[in-house]
Image 1: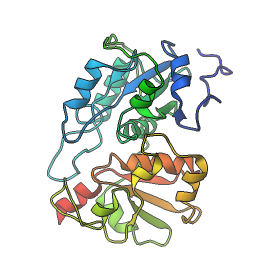
Image 2 (image 1 turned 180 degrees about the horizontal axis):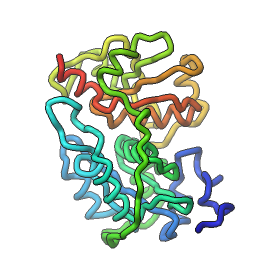
Image 3 (image 1 turned 180 degrees about the vertical axis):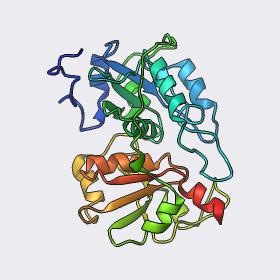
Length: 288
């Protein structure tokens, strides 16, 4: 069992901020059994690109998690383009990467190369399943490379850890819940997509343009700078300073992926009341 006073028993002080780790910290902890690295690179335009980039070069020891195969479930007529994954299957995948439950559970560091678009989905899923020791890599893979840290093409061995999922079902809402709550005085519905998609001026993916009536637009790209570094805590707090205390926040995007970047921002700002509309706009517009 891990020493409760060890640097990995709570959020390490070297972390850039809660839920965010620097490349320097990760480099110092490479190869430690208490740290597992998750490569979450993916491209919606080319679903094979992430796996190919991982095979060519990744942070040493990192395990690859594919958005479609690992971090999402089967797509149906409704439910959105990236439904939440089947819990048992994801738990098996996590265990194969050495991620286990218990008081000595490892810290898991997730990264991508798209301003946390997919790493935040992984971060949210692990916490949704009850694993709190998870953070995202500030600056992503590009920041790691620009800092001159090593990369590898070696695929780590499959492990046999036991991950016991404990889903927090109240962290997720469906379309009926959104319809029932979105206009309540203590609820705010947040659309995380780009402003053009929110306004219905451009819709590159879903068959219908527009947004859910009553939603407020807070684009997920505002959480980081253009290089993929998380903006300071003061800026995260300023993004949400208009939200009344104790407000229920229902957060969505196109398919429940980049909404997780806003959920990360809300946590950083001290507003842990965000819930994910997992189906998001792709589910909502499937009924229109």
